[in-house]
Amino acid sequence: MAKNYLKEIIISVVGIAVGYWICILSKKYSNLTIANEVAIEVNPFEIFTLIATILLAIYVTRSLNKSNEKEKGEKELLISYLKELKTTISSKTAKILEQDKIDSPETNAQLKILRQKVDTIIKLGEEFKFIDSNDKTSKQLQEYIKDLWEILTDCPEKTNIKASAAIKEGLEKLRLTQVNKAESKVISLEKVIFQLIMKVNQK
Image 1 (cartoon, rainbow, N blue to C red):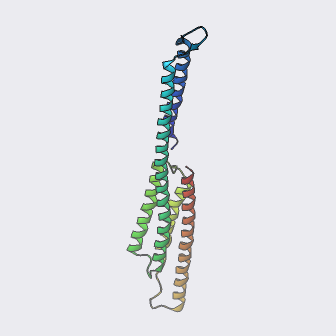
Image 2: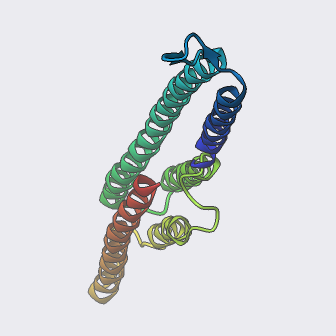
Image 3: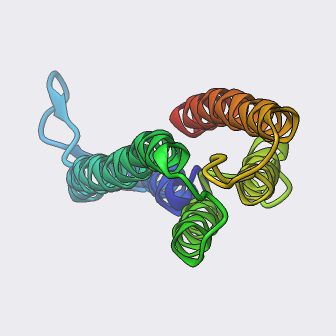
């Protein structure tokens, strides 16, 4: 986002340099002597340069302030999206894990929406230069949400079927293993989202 200020800073520096150069020339060639004892230098170019420099400084300051406010608003909006994403992942995963049959069309639809949301937020961050296109943290976020999808869709349903105690116990252990993996992955997702928020905040 520093590139947004570069043009204004260059204009300011050039304006001041030009003003200083005009001031030197005007002092050299524009002197009015009233008397032998008292000499008053009247320099309209110097006055004009001073006014132009002040106006230019005001313009640059106001432009930079507007740019800073705009950038701050964009950054805060992106951070709020990331915070909302963190909450959504946690709440949706918890609801999915409560279901008897996790691997269902409804679950797949919800997880697909989550992946799309992650991709959209990252693309927005890259578009507004808050997230680098090759940022490892954002790539890790995309990988983790994919991992969560695979874990949840590979989770067996609760054992309501007629089967031997050994089979039921095996299925319950497998389900518990997948549930623990999913909850662990959610914690990893929360951590990586926090890291991404810190990176965005430093821009």
